[in-house]
Length: 346
Image 1 (tube, rainbow, N blue to C red):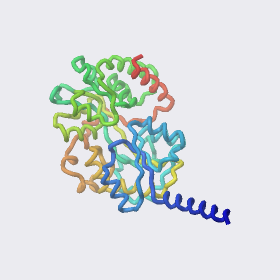
Image 2: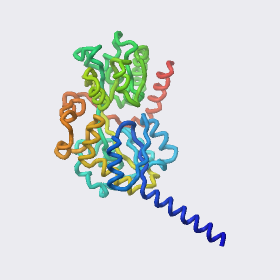
Image 3: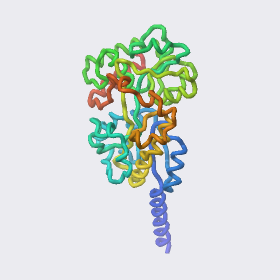
Image 4: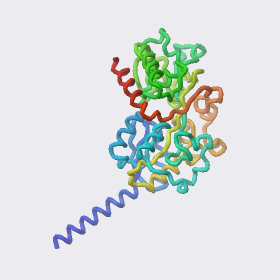
């Protein structure tokens, strides 16, 4: 009898865990990237509980998923080049687009990019740029036009850099006329040496909430993501976003399913919900990044401020000389080595 009771308890526990799993999804995303209202709406419409965890860099996300193959998460949101890297390492699984009713509504310019041909492993979540943020209370926007301006002596102690090695090296490399995706050792060394000269001007590194140091007037100029600049400008009209003539970085943050995800069907439901035009617009209005949905599908849901913002919707001239970030493969070790030396002051 005791064995039967134990067996029944085990069966009930297994059933309870299975039932719980069927009604959950574990999402791993950048901080401040989805409004709470969107999460609540998904839970209300589907009955699926969202377990939401955040990170502040691609490196942190990658390291955590690398350890378990993503067994702890059902959806993650890597940036452009990390999709490429994670796919090559078998950390994310192929996408079955037949399970996504809203895939056809995505902007074709964001589909079938080099980092993920035919979007076999990723679905665009938001896209944006990395350029220069300034506080016009202290700096005349007309005097800022290039990444080179970050090195000006008068900004000593008032510069902010992203806590993101590829973003920072992009700025240095482009200021030297090189590609932000270079694998050339000499070019990377030149960029590192140039960044060493910038360090006395750097007040801080920040990727958790880059707009905050600007709003607190801790810094006057720095590397910023477009969405952070947009949100900062809503609080302080002096915060301006400038596309450098030597080329902004362009990136797409994408929805992926880790290779060992447990709630795959829920992952597809979540991804399809996120790229639904009304939901994608709601996220874009909130975070200030650009929706991946076609304009004709999403326009009615965008607020006027978002729709008319060059920070969110840059012109072709704004994006002149810009680059998509790509996987630099084995050269990432050299980037990382220089990055660590830079931050510890070697």
